[in-house]
Amino acid sequence: MMPHTNQKITANEVSALMCPVCGGEKLIGFEKYLGCAKGHIYDKARQGYVNLLSANQKNSKNPGDNRMMVKSRAKFLNEGYYQPISNTLNMLITNEYLKPVKDNFHIADIGCGEGYYLSNLKQHLDSHLKVKANYYGIDISKEAIKLAAGHNKGILWCVGSAIKLPLQEKTIDIALSVFAPLYLNEYHRVLADMGRLITVTPSTLHLIEMRNILFSSITEKEKDKLVKKAEEYFTLENCLPLTFKCRIGVQEDIESLLAMTPFYFKSGGEKKAELLSLKELTVTVDVKISVFKKRGE
Image (cartoon, rainbow, N blue to C red):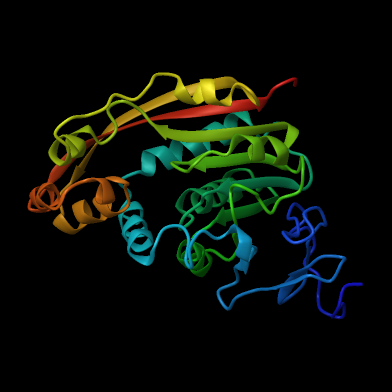
């Protein structure tokens, strides 16, 4: 029996979430916590997020991106450098995947980081379609979720693992993965039968100017690697290439871009120093936005 049931229930707020302990029970939203019918309780932090990451899902004390990486990415994204990616996602979802809009529509950004793309999507849908959707931002980094929750209260932000998502089966209508690791079996499990997985992944020329400075040789990305990886669970429905130039005229922003990429750890100190000595840098943003539907649909 659920304790403290005299507290206010927020309707539909967590109707897609699953108790990570039970592995199947639906989580119900109360004013200050979430709980399942078997009595497992998850308190909401002061910022409003919920920690649904169990101890056995951690590979370190503080898994995921650290505070430096999170703050660097937030600073860079908030300057608008990657806004064309966000705008393209918003228009694609608005024009193609919200017709017809049903009640209790569920959108989840898995590996959401500090929440830039999901927050922009919600703002866009609120202003253009007045969509009454439930939004979930999930990331294993507590630092990222804490920052996201502090900036946008209209989304349910959760610390959770993408390997075992705290989401019920067949509940998510749109799942986003923007530059995040892909665990396709889990996306398949949580997506509704008519749901869509939308990914943003780097293409061949992505940040090529930065890579040429940091590395003596560049390994070319395997073509259609994601499609081949996904074919056990999904069929590719749509693919939108997006390429644009991005001029970074502030040294601090060049440093932020480096800190938010894997290049920060993979490159040597001298090469990083060379990059960070630049007063400005123009980079190519080259990504692929892919839309997948579940096999057998």
